[in-house]
Amino acid sequence: MGKSVQLLLRIGNVVTIPAPQALMDALQSVQVTSSAGARSGFQLTFAVSKRSVITTALLPAGLLDPPARVVIAAVVGGSTEVLMDGVITRHELNPGEAPGAGTLTVTGEDLTLLMDLRTEQACYPALPHHARATLVVLKYAMYGMVPLAIPPVIATVPNPIDRIPIQSSTDLEYLNSLGEEVGYTFYLVPGPVPGASIAYWGPEIRIGVPQPALTTNSGAADNVDSLSFGFDGLSRKQYTVRITEPNTKIGVSVPIPSLSLLKPPLAARPATTLKEEPIVKLTDRSITEAMLRAISVTSKSADAVTGQGKLDVLRYGQALKARGLVGVRGAGLNYDGLYYVKSVTHDIKRGEYTQSFSLARDGFVPFSDRVSP
Image 1 (cartoon, rainbow, N blue to C red):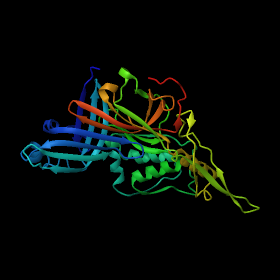
Image 2: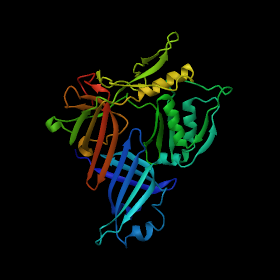
Image 3: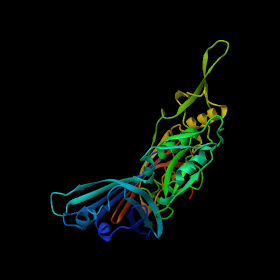
Image 4: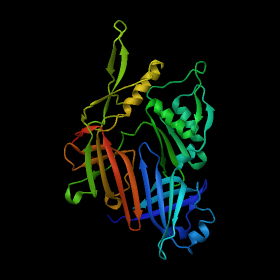
């Protein structure tokens, strides 16, 4: 223990500076949500009155007008964690019915919003998927975005004589469509320092060093306030390909094995698949494209086991990060082990820093009877 929390708030346009002291003094609460498969968002709540500096000077000056850039960071025990690098999308003023009861709520989303504002027209001859993703992200280097694009498991370079990839969409839509083709995802990781971020285009990160384990039902060793689990027996799907037997012309559904190239298993006993779903639109694709499509679809098979919980950051020792691995101990043999952190919501108030989180994995029973660290 012995740790403390300090909040850092920066506001500006392209370049941010520390927020005015009057804004920091009026800040009541901060909420930041990061979730796999969705854009991250934030909400700031300030106490205001009709004569406060915020209502008489800062708001009229346009300091909080969209799309002002906001950087939110938390310092826990001397270690700085950037929670959000985003832009304001709206604010709401509630004057209140009593003196001093007014609030100003500022809402925003991460910097990927800037990639989704206008349609772009571009072509990328003879460039593989990851090279195209890199070029798109580089257009936003002024915001401190550094591209990290992982080559697909099956590399394809389109022959410009046959086909030239064309973009006719927003940059965010194009990055997501590129990921859809190969089973990848795109999101922004704020940090490692305020004003910088990593634009990640690649598979879900289900390998590597896990975060400190979540401990429950272990007495004084507990570091979570609550943790519960659920199992959905209908969530997983068996994907099939329809093949027509040339002589009898009878169609047969051939199951596709679950490919763990992009989504390695986290449990020793995977949940049984009860639902079947065909993969369509493969007949007009090349063998390589068909394989990429199959890998993409199977990698999105839903996780059957989920967890929901809440923790105090000072008790846990650091901020839990979304889109990474974490261990669980104390929940019993069926549910202990590694999980993928699907989402995290940071709730910060004066003297209080809590997180709500959701976990997911493919089945039951850990591969190892020890969870570290």
